[in-house]
Length: 552
Image (cartoon, rainbow, N blue to C red; front, side, top):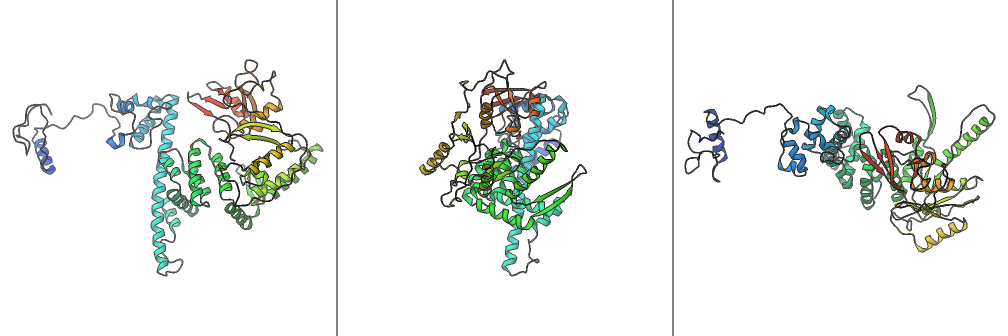
């Protein structure tokens, strides 16, 4: 308005004439329809003018109080300021840990991300990565929405199916009997895929609230959610609740393969009978020798669904043949060393936590007993032990000398098996102490938060003892999102030798690729604490890794 009283007279319902410069205002008892009718008459008569069009064209967004309630005030000011969504002011909000970089998915983040994607050339490297992360959060939120919709769809079809069955309708003629096939037609995908989506949606919405909430805020994607749901399906409700808490918290910081291994280990600890039954069924139905074409154009020959011990024995037989061929000079190459990481409770028969064998993955208690028994008879096998703190990180390490043949104990009693978080009983602690005493193991502390340089060495190449301590602390490459096994990694000096010590506080494992990456322009790696590695990328963003958490 231009500050003049409307020529059409007072606003309907008002007691007197409007004052100059005052906005028309209705009384509380004025009907809304009457007010809008008056507004239309005034506009049509030209006595009121609509607000002017914006001077510049720019993306528009309407923000309600509900949408904006969790928006950083500075970000909101930038959006509504003179540059707004049409200028450059909002781009800075995508910098690491800035407002848009941590904003929950919703209309505000969608508008900001759309604006950033419309002119990516105006963003710095860090802002560009922030926009990428925002787009991923929005995509994960969209998958959350798909999940709750699919779950509701499945419940409706299940209700129809149960009603038809209750009426005695024969199989194949019941309403709601083929929900996967119905979704497959709508999504243009396979029935197997849509069936799995239905199973996952039901598990997530019924029993996994933490994982579902993480999807809603955009930090867990579909693949990770499917991994968690598939590994909790065989658990009882109490164990599924525990697994949901553990895995939902860990999932955002783990690669898909790392999360899959953690989830599988948890399932083997909490539902060992179900895991064994599934393995036996797959062995009975799916054991075969398979030949297939590789993507490269070559071919492969594989045995599928074999017993782990049988597969390891077969591999050892093939390796023995390879040794003879190599020694004859007819072929060249090296052979892998079998390395098993076995929880003490599983070794001694009072736990079901799986062992991890390099190149083979997780082994259950029965497979672990067979592998340890066979390996202990080999003259070159050596036993090493890592003690862990309550947070499951390594605090001390020691190795036994000589050969120690092993006779596995009886299988654990399901009634007394050690559960996650249980403290060993006095009898179990005495059993472990006796084992360490018989093997004459002397432990050395692992440097974590601070370092007293007790293991520092005046040499470039670290000794076997120092390598063991470093690998006990970090089982994998210390670069973020890398899963290369530490035993195959370089031991890298964070500050190059001789300026930097050959010590636990200045060395850690890095795979060859990340060792070279660290030395490339724009990259930097520091070690603010012995057990911490902080990387800075060419985009200026920082990421840190900590000591390995053992899944025990």
